[in-house]
Image (cartoon, rainbow, N blue to C red; front, side, top):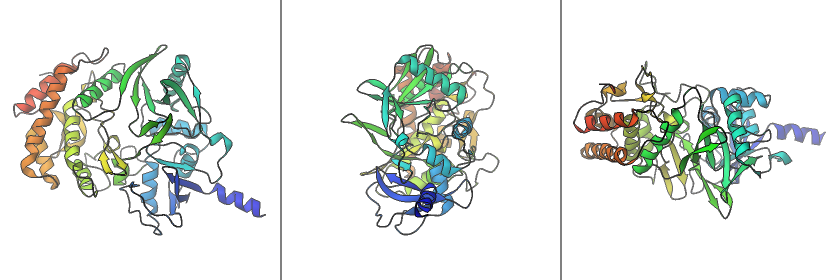
Length: 432
Protein backbone atom coordinates (compact mmCIF):
# COMPACT_ATOMS: atom_id res chain seq x y z
CA UNK A 1 0.00 0.00 0.00
CA UNK A 2 2.73 2.43 0.97
CA UNK A 3 4.83 1.54 -2.11
CA UNK A 4 1.83 2.06 -4.39
CA UNK A 5 1.14 5.41 -2.76
CA UNK A 6 4.81 6.40 -3.11
CA UNK A 7 4.87 5.46 -6.80
CA UNK A 8 1.77 7.54 -7.48
CA UNK A 9 3.24 10.49 -5.60
CA UNK A 10 6.53 10.28 -7.48
CA UNK A 11 4.70 10.08 -10.80
CA UNK A 12 3.09 13.42 -10.02
CA UNK A 13 6.33 15.17 -9.01
CA UNK A 14 9.39 16.41 -10.84
CA UNK A 15 12.60 17.82 -9.42
CA UNK A 16 13.96 21.16 -10.68
CA UNK A 17 17.75 21.56 -10.61
CA UNK A 18 19.93 24.61 -11.20
CA UNK A 19 23.50 23.69 -12.10
CA UNK A 20 22.76 20.20 -10.80
CA UNK A 21 21.51 21.35 -7.38
CA UNK A 22 17.86 20.48 -6.57
CA UNK A 23 16.01 23.71 -5.80
CA UNK A 24 12.30 22.98 -6.22
CA UNK A 25 9.59 20.46 -7.00
CA UNK A 26 7.02 20.60 -9.77
CA UNK A 27 3.47 19.30 -9.63
CA UNK A 28 0.62 19.52 -12.10
CA UNK A 29 -1.16 22.86 -12.08
CA UNK A 30 -4.82 23.75 -12.16
CA UNK A 31 -4.91 23.35 -15.95
CA UNK A 32 -3.12 21.02 -18.33
CA UNK A 33 -0.86 23.84 -19.56
CA UNK A 34 0.26 24.79 -16.06
CA UNK A 35 2.59 23.49 -13.38
CA UNK A 36 2.98 24.38 -9.72
CA UNK A 37 6.50 25.16 -8.48
CA UNK A 38 7.42 24.78 -4.81
CA UNK A 39 10.85 25.63 -3.39
CA UNK A 40 12.69 22.95 -1.46
CA UNK A 41 12.96 23.38 2.29
CA UNK A 42 16.15 25.25 3.04
CA UNK A 43 16.50 26.58 -0.49
CA UNK A 44 18.56 29.76 -0.62
CA UNK A 45 19.11 31.65 -3.89
CA UNK A 46 22.76 31.61 -4.93
CA UNK A 47 24.89 33.95 -7.03
CA UNK A 48 23.22 32.88 -10.30
CA UNK A 49 19.83 34.50 -10.85
CA UNK A 50 17.19 31.93 -11.74
CA UNK A 51 14.78 34.15 -13.68
CA UNK A 52 13.46 37.66 -14.21
CA UNK A 53 9.91 36.32 -14.65
CA UNK A 54 9.05 36.28 -10.94
CA UNK A 55 10.62 36.93 -7.56
CA UNK A 56 12.60 34.02 -6.19
CA UNK A 57 11.81 34.16 -2.49
CA UNK A 58 12.34 31.08 -0.32
CA UNK A 59 9.14 29.66 1.20
CA UNK A 60 6.93 31.80 -1.06
CA UNK A 61 5.48 29.90 -4.00
CA UNK A 62 5.66 31.82 -7.30
CA UNK A 63 2.39 32.43 -9.15
CA UNK A 64 1.40 29.33 -11.10
CA UNK A 65 0.94 31.11 -14.41
CA UNK A 66 4.29 32.93 -14.11
CA UNK A 67 6.17 29.71 -13.34
CA UNK A 68 4.35 27.90 -16.16
CA UNK A 69 5.13 30.52 -18.80
CA UNK A 70 8.77 30.55 -17.72
CA UNK A 71 9.20 26.77 -17.85
CA UNK A 72 6.97 26.39 -20.91
CA UNK A 73 9.24 28.86 -22.67
CA UNK A 74 11.93 26.19 -22.77
CA UNK A 75 9.70 23.93 -24.91
CA UNK A 76 9.84 23.64 -28.70
CA UNK A 77 7.17 25.33 -30.80
CA UNK A 78 4.82 24.56 -33.64
CA UNK A 79 5.25 21.29 -35.52
CA UNK A 80 8.24 20.33 -33.41
CA UNK A 81 6.24 20.35 -30.18
CA UNK A 82 3.38 18.49 -31.88
CA UNK A 83 5.66 15.78 -33.27
CA UNK A 84 7.70 15.32 -30.11
CA UNK A 85 4.60 15.13 -27.93
CA UNK A 86 2.96 12.61 -30.26
CA UNK A 87 6.09 10.43 -30.22
CA UNK A 88 5.83 10.16 -26.42
CA UNK A 89 2.07 9.77 -26.33
CA UNK A 90 1.39 13.06 -24.55
CA UNK A 91 -0.57 16.16 -25.45
CA UNK A 92 1.39 19.14 -26.81
CA UNK A 93 -0.24 21.46 -24.26
CA UNK A 94 0.54 19.18 -21.29
CA UNK A 95 3.40 21.12 -19.73
CA UNK A 96 4.10 18.67 -16.91
CA UNK A 97 4.36 15.79 -19.39
CA UNK A 98 6.63 17.74 -21.76
CA UNK A 99 8.96 18.60 -18.89
CA UNK A 100 8.92 15.01 -17.68
CA UNK A 101 9.78 13.68 -21.14
CA UNK A 102 12.23 16.31 -22.37
CA UNK A 103 13.34 18.39 -19.36
CA UNK A 104 16.61 16.53 -18.81
CA UNK A 105 18.51 18.96 -21.03
CA UNK A 106 16.98 22.30 -21.97
CA UNK A 107 18.38 25.76 -22.68
CA UNK A 108 20.44 27.18 -19.86
CA UNK A 109 21.37 25.45 -16.60
CA UNK A 110 17.93 24.34 -15.39
CA UNK A 111 17.27 20.61 -15.67
CA UNK A 112 14.18 18.65 -14.70
CA UNK A 113 13.99 15.00 -13.71
CA UNK A 114 11.75 12.49 -11.94
CA UNK A 115 12.49 11.93 -8.22
CA UNK A 116 13.92 8.51 -9.07
CA UNK A 117 15.84 8.54 -12.34
CA UNK A 118 15.11 5.66 -14.72
CA UNK A 119 18.17 4.02 -16.26
CA UNK A 120 17.29 5.27 -19.74
CA UNK A 121 17.45 8.88 -18.51
CA UNK A 122 21.10 8.63 -17.51
CA UNK A 123 23.49 10.58 -19.73
CA UNK A 124 25.66 8.89 -22.30
CA UNK A 125 27.19 9.74 -25.66
CA UNK A 126 27.51 7.68 -28.82
CA UNK A 127 30.06 8.65 -31.44
CA UNK A 128 28.45 9.40 -34.82
CA UNK A 129 29.90 9.72 -38.32
CA UNK A 130 28.76 11.88 -41.22
CA UNK A 131 26.24 9.33 -42.53
CA UNK A 132 24.41 9.20 -39.19
CA UNK A 133 24.44 12.99 -38.90
CA UNK A 134 22.94 13.18 -42.39
CA UNK A 135 20.23 10.72 -41.31
CA UNK A 136 19.42 12.79 -38.21
CA UNK A 137 19.19 15.97 -40.30
CA UNK A 138 16.76 14.29 -42.70
CA UNK A 139 14.77 13.00 -39.74
CA UNK A 140 14.54 16.53 -38.31
CA UNK A 141 13.20 17.80 -41.65
CA UNK A 142 10.74 14.96 -42.22
CA UNK A 143 9.47 14.38 -38.68
CA UNK A 144 9.97 17.78 -36.98
CA UNK A 145 11.39 15.96 -33.93
CA UNK A 146 14.89 17.48 -33.53
CA UNK A 147 16.27 14.34 -35.15
CA UNK A 148 16.22 12.86 -31.66
CA UNK A 149 16.83 9.30 -30.55
CA UNK A 150 13.98 7.50 -28.79
CA UNK A 151 15.66 7.89 -25.39
CA UNK A 152 16.41 11.61 -25.74
CA UNK A 153 15.43 13.82 -22.80
CA UNK A 154 16.36 17.06 -24.63
CA UNK A 155 14.39 19.92 -26.14
CA UNK A 156 15.05 23.45 -27.34
CA UNK A 157 12.71 26.31 -28.38
CA UNK A 158 11.94 27.24 -31.96
CA UNK A 159 10.10 26.23 -35.14
CA UNK A 160 13.07 25.61 -37.43
CA UNK A 161 14.21 22.00 -37.98
CA UNK A 162 17.40 21.31 -36.06
CA UNK A 163 19.51 18.56 -34.54
CA UNK A 164 21.31 18.67 -31.17
CA UNK A 165 24.78 17.12 -31.08
CA UNK A 166 27.89 17.39 -28.92
CA UNK A 167 31.39 17.93 -30.25
CA UNK A 168 33.83 16.59 -27.66
CA UNK A 169 37.53 16.12 -28.41
CA UNK A 170 36.74 17.21 -31.97
CA UNK A 171 34.41 14.26 -32.54
CA UNK A 172 30.65 14.35 -33.06
CA UNK A 173 28.71 12.66 -30.27
CA UNK A 174 24.98 11.98 -30.12
CA UNK A 175 23.55 12.76 -26.67
CA UNK A 176 21.37 10.04 -25.15
CA UNK A 177 19.21 10.28 -22.06
CA UNK A 178 19.77 13.64 -20.40
CA UNK A 179 23.25 14.13 -21.88
CA UNK A 180 23.83 17.70 -23.02
CA UNK A 181 24.55 18.92 -26.53
CA UNK A 182 27.13 21.55 -27.41
CA UNK A 183 26.02 22.37 -30.98
CA UNK A 184 22.85 23.02 -32.95
CA UNK A 185 22.74 21.87 -36.57
CA UNK A 186 20.18 23.56 -38.82
CA UNK A 187 19.63 21.79 -42.16
CA UNK A 188 19.16 23.68 -45.41
CA UNK A 189 15.61 23.26 -46.71
CA UNK A 190 14.87 22.72 -50.39
CA UNK A 191 11.91 25.12 -50.12
CA UNK A 192 14.22 27.96 -49.00
CA UNK A 193 17.77 27.03 -49.99
CA UNK A 194 19.09 30.56 -49.40
CA UNK A 195 17.89 30.80 -45.77
CA UNK A 196 20.77 28.92 -44.11
CA UNK A 197 23.56 30.74 -46.04
CA UNK A 198 21.76 34.03 -45.30
CA UNK A 199 21.64 33.21 -41.58
CA UNK A 200 25.33 32.33 -41.62
CA UNK A 201 26.05 35.67 -43.30
CA UNK A 202 24.03 37.44 -40.60
CA UNK A 203 26.03 35.65 -37.93
CA UNK A 204 29.34 36.60 -39.57
CA UNK A 205 28.30 40.25 -39.58
CA UNK A 206 27.27 40.06 -35.92
CA UNK A 207 30.63 38.50 -35.07
CA UNK A 208 32.52 41.19 -36.99
CA UNK A 209 30.61 43.81 -35.00
CA UNK A 210 31.43 42.15 -31.66
CA UNK A 211 27.87 40.97 -30.99
CA UNK A 212 28.72 37.26 -31.15
CA UNK A 213 31.72 35.18 -30.14
CA UNK A 214 30.58 31.56 -30.56
CA UNK A 215 31.68 29.56 -33.58
CA UNK A 216 29.48 28.83 -36.59
CA UNK A 217 30.15 27.20 -39.93
CA UNK A 218 28.41 25.73 -42.93
CA UNK A 219 28.99 21.98 -42.92
CA UNK A 220 28.22 19.17 -45.35
CA UNK A 221 27.05 15.78 -44.13
CA UNK A 222 26.49 13.52 -47.10
CA UNK A 223 23.89 15.26 -49.24
CA UNK A 224 22.84 17.59 -46.41
CA UNK A 225 24.20 21.10 -45.85
CA UNK A 226 23.67 22.50 -42.37
CA UNK A 227 24.54 25.57 -40.34
CA UNK A 228 26.59 24.26 -37.41
CA UNK A 229 26.26 26.60 -34.43
CA UNK A 230 28.14 26.35 -31.15
CA UNK A 231 25.80 26.80 -28.17
CA UNK A 232 26.68 29.83 -26.05
CA UNK A 233 24.93 28.27 -23.02
CA UNK A 234 27.39 25.37 -22.98
CA UNK A 235 31.10 25.06 -22.15
CA UNK A 236 33.51 22.13 -22.35
CA UNK A 237 35.69 21.75 -19.25
CA UNK A 238 38.02 18.77 -18.87
CA UNK A 239 36.05 16.90 -21.52
CA UNK A 240 32.70 17.46 -19.78
CA UNK A 241 29.81 19.68 -20.87
CA UNK A 242 29.13 22.50 -18.39
CA UNK A 243 25.93 24.58 -18.40
CA UNK A 244 25.54 28.36 -18.49
CA UNK A 245 22.17 29.56 -17.25
CA UNK A 246 19.94 31.26 -19.82
CA UNK A 247 16.41 32.49 -20.31
CA UNK A 248 15.01 34.32 -23.30
CA UNK A 249 13.22 37.63 -23.00
CA UNK A 250 9.81 36.14 -23.75
CA UNK A 251 10.28 34.00 -20.65
CA UNK A 252 11.57 36.94 -18.63
CA UNK A 253 8.54 39.02 -19.67
CA UNK A 254 6.15 36.16 -18.83
CA UNK A 255 4.50 35.82 -22.26
CA UNK A 256 2.08 32.95 -22.85
CA UNK A 257 4.12 29.84 -23.67
CA UNK A 258 1.30 28.25 -25.69
CA UNK A 259 0.62 31.23 -27.98
CA UNK A 260 3.02 31.14 -30.95
CA UNK A 261 2.34 34.82 -31.68
CA UNK A 262 2.92 36.01 -28.12
CA UNK A 263 6.65 36.61 -28.67
CA UNK A 264 5.83 39.30 -31.29
CA UNK A 265 4.49 42.76 -30.62
CA UNK A 266 0.83 42.98 -31.58
CA UNK A 267 0.53 45.24 -34.62
CA UNK A 268 -3.20 45.78 -34.08
CA UNK A 269 -2.76 46.63 -30.39
CA UNK A 270 0.91 47.59 -30.02
CA UNK A 271 0.51 48.65 -26.37
CA UNK A 272 -0.81 45.31 -25.17
CA UNK A 273 0.81 44.59 -21.81
CA UNK A 274 0.92 40.83 -22.38
CA UNK A 275 2.99 41.16 -25.57
CA UNK A 276 6.59 42.42 -25.85
CA UNK A 277 7.80 45.71 -27.27
CA UNK A 278 11.23 47.25 -27.59
CA UNK A 279 10.32 49.53 -24.71
CA UNK A 280 9.08 46.79 -22.36
CA UNK A 281 12.29 44.85 -22.99
CA UNK A 282 14.42 47.93 -22.23
CA UNK A 283 12.46 48.67 -19.07
CA UNK A 284 12.92 45.10 -17.86
CA UNK A 285 16.66 45.15 -18.58
CA UNK A 286 17.06 48.41 -16.68
CA UNK A 287 15.67 46.81 -13.51
CA UNK A 288 18.17 43.92 -13.32
CA UNK A 289 20.56 44.69 -10.45
CA UNK A 290 24.35 44.61 -10.75
CA UNK A 291 24.11 44.36 -14.53
CA UNK A 292 24.82 47.77 -16.08
CA UNK A 293 24.76 48.33 -19.81
CA UNK A 294 21.96 45.89 -20.64
CA UNK A 295 19.62 48.51 -22.10
CA UNK A 296 22.42 49.99 -24.21
CA UNK A 297 23.32 46.53 -25.49
CA UNK A 298 19.64 46.00 -26.32
CA UNK A 299 19.64 49.19 -28.42
CA UNK A 300 22.62 47.84 -30.37
CA UNK A 301 20.80 44.55 -30.91
CA UNK A 302 17.57 46.25 -32.02
CA UNK A 303 19.48 48.42 -34.49
CA UNK A 304 21.27 45.34 -35.87
CA UNK A 305 17.93 43.57 -36.46
CA UNK A 306 16.71 46.61 -38.39
CA UNK A 307 19.94 46.83 -40.40
CA UNK A 308 19.88 43.24 -41.64
CA UNK A 309 16.08 43.13 -42.07
CA UNK A 310 15.46 40.48 -39.43
CA UNK A 311 11.69 40.29 -39.06
CA UNK A 312 12.09 37.33 -36.68
CA UNK A 313 13.94 39.31 -33.98
CA UNK A 314 11.16 38.70 -31.46
CA UNK A 315 11.47 38.33 -27.68
CA UNK A 316 12.48 34.66 -27.85
CA UNK A 317 15.41 35.47 -30.11
CA UNK A 318 17.12 37.61 -27.50
CA UNK A 319 18.35 35.98 -24.31
CA UNK A 320 19.88 36.73 -20.94
CA UNK A 321 22.83 34.80 -19.54
CA UNK A 322 22.78 34.59 -15.75
CA UNK A 323 26.27 34.03 -14.38
CA UNK A 324 27.85 34.35 -10.91
CA UNK A 325 29.23 37.77 -11.80
CA UNK A 326 25.87 39.13 -12.98
CA UNK A 327 23.52 39.05 -15.94
CA UNK A 328 24.42 39.98 -19.49
CA UNK A 329 22.78 39.94 -22.89
CA UNK A 330 23.61 36.70 -24.68
CA UNK A 331 25.36 36.75 -28.04
CA UNK A 332 23.23 37.59 -31.06
CA UNK A 333 21.70 34.46 -32.56
CA UNK A 334 19.19 33.51 -35.28
CA UNK A 335 20.39 36.53 -37.26
CA UNK A 336 18.25 35.92 -40.31
CA UNK A 337 17.72 38.70 -42.92
CA UNK A 338 14.23 37.43 -43.76
CA UNK A 339 13.07 40.72 -45.24
CA UNK A 340 15.40 40.08 -48.17
CA UNK A 341 13.85 36.78 -49.20
CA UNK A 342 13.08 36.62 -52.91
CA UNK A 343 9.47 37.65 -53.52
CA UNK A 344 9.09 39.43 -50.19
CA UNK A 345 5.97 41.59 -50.06
CA UNK A 346 5.52 42.60 -46.40
CA UNK A 347 8.40 44.38 -44.65
CA UNK A 348 7.19 44.35 -41.05
CA UNK A 349 9.53 43.89 -38.10
CA UNK A 350 8.79 41.78 -35.03
CA UNK A 351 8.94 44.88 -32.79
CA UNK A 352 8.06 48.41 -33.83
CA UNK A 353 10.50 51.32 -33.80
CA UNK A 354 8.96 54.63 -32.76
CA UNK A 355 5.55 53.15 -33.53
CA UNK A 356 6.60 51.94 -37.01
CA UNK A 357 6.73 48.26 -38.02
CA UNK A 358 7.70 48.77 -41.69
CA UNK A 359 11.48 48.39 -41.86
CA UNK A 360 11.66 50.60 -44.97
CA UNK A 361 10.48 53.61 -42.93
CA UNK A 362 13.11 53.30 -40.22
CA UNK A 363 15.80 55.97 -39.89
CA UNK A 364 18.42 56.79 -37.25
CA UNK A 365 16.07 59.52 -36.07
CA UNK A 366 13.28 56.99 -35.49
CA UNK A 367 15.66 54.66 -33.65
CA UNK A 368 16.78 57.59 -31.52
CA UNK A 369 13.21 58.57 -30.72
CA UNK A 370 12.38 54.97 -29.80
CA UNK A 371 15.35 54.67 -27.45
CA UNK A 372 14.66 58.05 -25.86
CA UNK A 373 11.10 56.95 -25.06
CA UNK A 374 12.44 54.14 -22.87
CA UNK A 375 13.66 56.65 -20.30
CA UNK A 376 16.55 54.41 -19.26
CA UNK A 377 19.44 55.70 -21.43
CA UNK A 378 21.19 59.10 -21.31
CA UNK A 379 19.48 60.96 -24.12
CA UNK A 380 22.64 62.79 -25.21
CA UNK A 381 24.45 59.51 -25.93
CA UNK A 382 21.79 57.73 -27.99
CA UNK A 383 22.44 59.17 -31.45
CA UNK A 384 26.20 58.73 -31.19
CA UNK A 385 25.71 55.09 -30.19
CA UNK A 386 23.35 54.47 -33.10
CA UNK A 387 25.64 56.11 -35.63
CA UNK A 388 28.52 54.03 -34.27
CA UNK A 389 26.47 50.85 -34.73
CA UNK A 390 25.53 51.72 -38.31
CA UNK A 391 29.16 52.62 -39.09
CA UNK A 392 30.35 49.32 -37.62
CA UNK A 393 27.75 47.51 -39.73
CA UNK A 394 28.97 49.26 -42.90
CA UNK A 395 32.55 48.24 -42.06
CA UNK A 396 31.50 44.64 -41.44
CA UNK A 397 29.66 44.47 -44.77
CA UNK A 398 32.79 45.80 -46.46
CA UNK A 399 35.04 43.12 -44.99
CA UNK A 400 32.78 40.03 -44.69
CA UNK A 401 32.08 38.21 -47.94
CA UNK A 402 28.64 36.60 -48.36
CA UNK A 403 28.81 32.79 -48.37
CA UNK A 404 28.00 30.75 -51.43
CA UNK A 405 24.26 30.25 -51.78
CA UNK A 406 23.22 33.50 -50.05
CA UNK A 407 20.67 35.75 -51.73
CA UNK A 408 22.72 37.38 -54.54
CA UNK A 409 21.67 40.98 -53.90
CA UNK A 410 22.00 40.77 -50.09
CA UNK A 411 25.34 42.52 -49.76
CA UNK A 412 24.29 45.34 -52.08
CA UNK A 413 21.14 45.88 -50.05
CA UNK A 414 23.14 46.02 -46.81
CA UNK A 415 25.47 48.61 -48.32
CA UNK A 416 22.50 50.71 -49.43
CA UNK A 417 20.83 50.43 -46.02
CA UNK A 418 23.93 51.71 -44.20
CA UNK A 419 24.49 54.54 -46.71
CA UNK A 420 20.91 55.79 -46.45
CA UNK A 421 20.86 55.70 -42.65
CA UNK A 422 24.20 57.47 -42.30
CA UNK A 423 22.96 60.13 -44.74
CA UNK A 424 20.02 60.81 -42.41
CA UNK A 425 17.32 59.14 -44.48
CA UNK A 426 15.04 56.15 -44.18
CA UNK A 427 16.06 52.67 -45.31
CA UNK A 428 13.56 52.84 -48.13
CA UNK A 429 12.63 50.26 -50.71
CA UNK A 430 15.52 47.81 -51.25
CA UNK A 431 14.90 47.81 -55.02
CA UNK A 432 14.93 51.57 -55.44
